[in-house]
Length: 172
Ligand SMILES: CC(C)(COP(=O)(O)OP(=O)(O)OC[C@H]1O[C@@H](n2cnc3c(N)ncnc32)[C@H](O)[C@@H]1OP(=O)(O)O)[C@@H](O)C(=O)NCCC(=O)NCCS
Image (cartoon, rainbow, N blue to C red; front, side, top):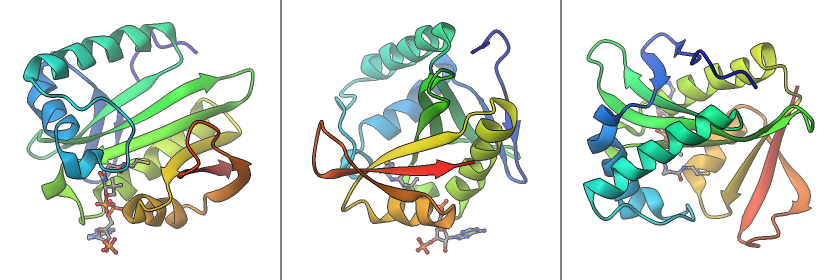
C-alpha cells in the first residue's frame, strides 16, 4: 500500500491524523492505563520513553505499508483523545485488522463510533479491501458494543493465539 502521503481523515468533531512525537503524553496515557490495557495483550508503557519508542516504532512500520495508525484528536481544541490503527494490511488477502482505544475521560461520548465509521469508509472505499477484522476479548463489552453498531459478525474461526479472544469481521 502506498503510504507516501498520510491519509488524514476528518469527521464532524474529529481529525484523525498521523501520530507525532508530540503525542507522547497522550500515547503514554493510553498505554500506561491498566483500565485501557485490561483486554489488550501488550507490554504496557511504564515510562514516557516507552511511549516515545512506541511512536518511533509505529512511524517505522507505517513506512513498510502494512500498518496505519491515526491519532484521534478533537478538531476544535486539537486535543489528543485516542487512536485507531489498521494492522496487517494485505492487498493479497484483501483484508486488514482494526484496533482502537480512547483515553478514559473521553469515553462514553460517541467519539470512537464517529472515528471508526470514517476508518471503515476509508478501508472499503479508498483502499478497497473486502474484509475488516477485529480481535476482541470476550469480556470487552465496550468494544463488542462498538463492533455491533457496525454489524461486525463473529467468525466461527477461533483466534489460535488465545481462546479468550474472538475474531469479528465486517465484509464489504
Ligand atoms: C473500546 C472503546 C474505544 C469504546 O469507547 P466508547 O466511548 O465506549 O465508544 P463510543 O465512541 O462508541 O461511545 C459509545 C458511548 O457513547 C455514548 N454517546 C454519548 N454521546 C454520543 C454521541 N453523540 N454519539 C454516539 N454515542 C454517544 C453512547 O450512548 C455510548 O454509551 P454506552 O456504551 O453506555 O451506550 C473504549 O472502551 C476503550 O478505549 N477501551 C479500552 C481499549 C480497548 O479495549 N480497545 C479495544 C480493543 S479490541
